[in-house]
Every structure is written in C-alpha cells, then in structure tokens.
Length: 204
Image 1: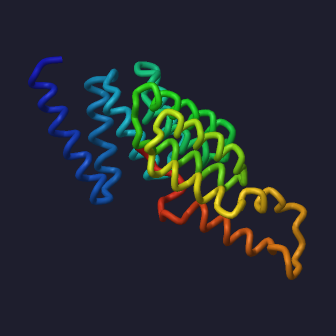
Image 2: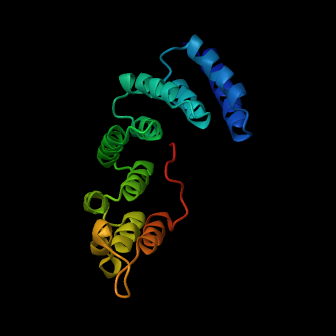
Image 3: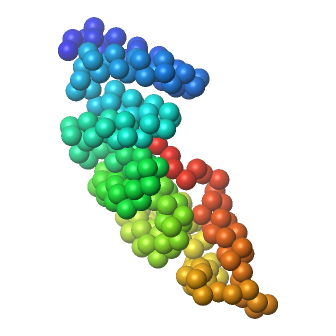
C-alpha cells in the first residue's frame, strides 16, 4: 500500500467517525466496508466496523469483526473487551467474562491503567451478584496498579461496613426489623455498582 492509499484511508476513516458521532451508522458502515474491500488486512477498519455493529446491536457480526482483529493482533485488549460486550448481550455470560479477563491480562502486560475491561467486568460481576469475584479482580488490579483510583473506590464500596457479607446472605434473608429486605438489598447493589453513573458495558 502506497502513501496515497493511506492518505485516502485516513480521510475516509475520519469521515466514518464523523458519521458515527452524528448517529449515521449506515453511512459509516458503507465506508468501512469499502476500506476493508480495499485492504482486507486492516485491523483498524475491522475494529471500527465492529463498533458500528455494536451500535446497531448486531452483536454476532461484531464478534466476527473482532475475530478478524484478534487473528492478526491476539493481544489487542480493546478487541477482547468489545467481543466480551457482544457475548454478554447475546447472553453468553461465561464467555463474556473469560474475554474480559483476557483483556485485563493484556492490559496489565501493556501497563494500561485506564481499563474499560476492568470496569465492565466489575459491573458484570455486580449484575451476577458475584461479589467475591469482583473483590478478587480488584485486588489483582491493585497489585499491578496500586494507585488506581477506580479500583480503590470500587473496593472501598464493596467492603464498606461489611456490605459484602450482607449481600452474600441474599437467599436467606427475610424481612424483619433487624434485617435487610430484598428490596433494600437491590437498592444497595445499585448504589455500589452503578454509583459512578457509568453504563454497564462500554466499547473501547
């Protein structure tokens, strides 16, 4: 590929991003399809085409795009994260979690402290009420990034006033004057895991 092609590619990729920002997903899709037809090995075009499919809720098609990326760049943490989003939305929870974990491993290796995969995985554990796994993951992250503000905040929220021990009793709690009701626990879960106002799943 010559300099002229790369100039063309950058120009059209920028235009596709503008279409995405303005909600014109189909226009962006047409550009990425054209770029891929001209250069089928472009991981950038496959990656961004996957983002369009996620926006359109075409998760299986997005997975295919990220498989193309990972075939050439198996340590691409963003592709692992985004494919995890798709598996989660297709209700393959275990597959999604494995992919988030893989993304996190590569982010640690690459010293990427600002992690979408971490916040997505912690949110997923919250939805699944797997609070012990959330703590293990946060401790792992803090071992490598001890100054991580996000990880510290999430861990503090989990441990505050021994909330984790109350939450694990969800299936045995009955309403009474000295115990939490299930509705109260639901409010507590919401406060812990959604208090920062971030969406559950975020593409990178």
